[in-house]
Length: 356
Image (cartoon, rainbow, N blue to C red):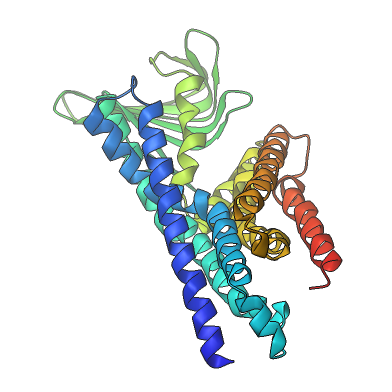
């Protein structure tokens, strides 16, 4: 059994690597084509290289499905499954050899989402704003208590930003001269955008005297802040959460909750990182019935077509559920996990019909 297990495991691992590599390259070149009029060729290549780990994670589920169908169908077509059955080794034992590989593969996907993707997304963001948009002064760190936004002669420190209401809860504004010497700073509990300017509420302003250098501070209940940035600019903070690790994203969500900000969209992002890593195991279970049902009849192509059709509906339902969760129509956990639960039961039903 050990020799047979090594044989099956090596065949599956080879197919999994080839499937994942092939789908990732396909995703890479498809992304290059869709951006043909948006960036220069060099910019497109660099942006997509930063996206490679994310592409790997996205194609992991269909790669598992493809590797499962190819491996089991090949064993069935060459009568190797029949030989296994004849010596008392059923499909359960064969699946038990492959499943640990899929489980480790899913764990690697989760680790990549937590450790590798945030770093690559951070580098991609810096490249996009500084090299493509030519915003050399741009810097944004959305970690808890570290939301910094730099633009021209101002540096902003935001405690929280409410993207729904377009307001800032807790803001510090630091103004510098051309030599980057601090001229003054303002702190306010809240900032509301009126359409032409930001209205700071309940704060204080400190100005450094030009001759003596001593600070002069005054309090205010309301004060205008006229800067070019609008709520649309600060909404970039929500997109930058892809740079956060899971623990940092959790703290960011807790910080928003404490400030009374609707964080359902961020909670869905958090839950989806876990559910996305779980999908390869569901794909593995779904592929088994199609891989062993008609392999000897030379219908591997049809089996792959049916399996990928199920994958399409899986991703469609997953995308719809995530959208509903971000809009608040579904709880975050339900939005992220319900497609996996539904298709997981479908996989178990199909396996039971085959008496696996």
